[in-house]
Image (tube, rainbow, N blue to C red; front, side, top):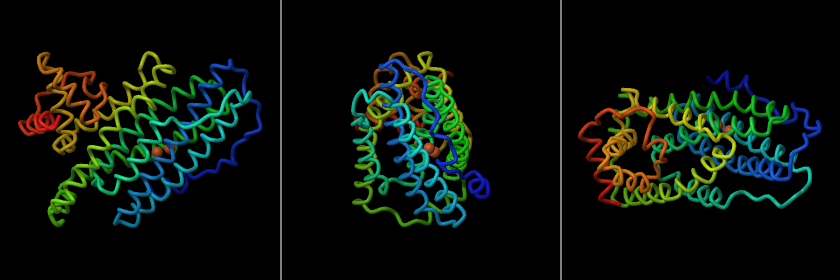
Length: 308
Ligand SMILES: [Fe+2]
Ligand SMILES: [Fe+2]
């Protein structure tokens, strides 16, 4: 993977930015420039995440892989800014990143150090699937221009390495090797537990408005049938359905909440839980019917109801 990461490096200057942008209506131009402005913010958030993963990695090869990912994400952010400038032909307004993105980013970076690497990986994996499988492809189809397509093709190649590692890390955090390591760690103090709980609740509180404003709302405009977003969530669902992964706490809570949602009388409760834990509707009501979860999963979901 590390040699793939090294071989896959490229520079923004490798692309020809001087070609003329296509004619667009004022509405389309404003939408496109805003998408790329927000995309720059998401990519910088991804860079901050991988910086955190890099600092936690004990294996030097893993740390080096994450370092290349930080480089990738910073390059993607720069590309998004260049694309925003490229399509901002008529200077129709001043573009700023969506305040919801800034708000979530602020909490995310601040609370990241309190989260376990396993929980942080859940956010990375869902975020990258949504960004790569759904949002970027849809924006590219909407823009429909070779400049954007060329940039997106390169970004997609980088992102497929990231997603491969996200899946690998998710399986690692469910492996006997990691669980044995976890066992050997000193038990967290009451204060650390309180801080971690606070961090997680803050993040959950801001996760849903962030997902809605940055991923789901733009997706409704550029992919009205919702096919790509369904595919992104289906890929995450397939990951947490793997027997090796489904026993971990977050997959168990998700499965438990899905099981509640599939019982007509319990659906409002499940919806309330989903709001509290920041679970998007597409994951609350997956395409396939959830199997009966373990008693632990139901207890986990019930505990969330009590918090709510
Ligand atoms: Fe990226
Ligand atoms: Fe990425």
